[in-house]
Length: 104
Image (tube, rainbow, N blue to C red):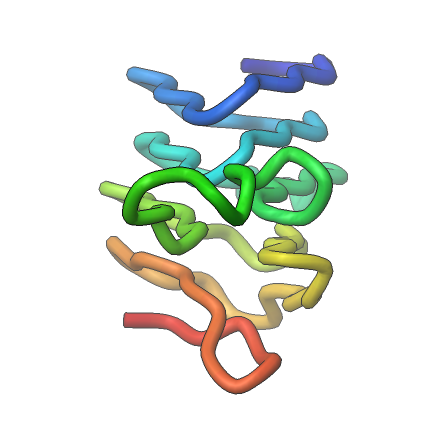
């Protein structure tokens, strides 16, 4: 996904990289990579207004799963909490814990 804005109801799975885009999903985003070596604007966002209703059976915790690289300059937002990526990362799963975005 490049230079796009995508909003998915519950889950967004991209078989390749997400570059210079703003993508949102209710509880999960999966991608090969986030951002680019050039540091292009890129936001991946889950939770918040798109999250599952509170009365949903066993609501899933919001997360962003990256199978390859997360490049410096990408921004991850989970349930309204924002994390700007300062250094390149390898495969990572981002979740929210105690009001902060954390890496697993």
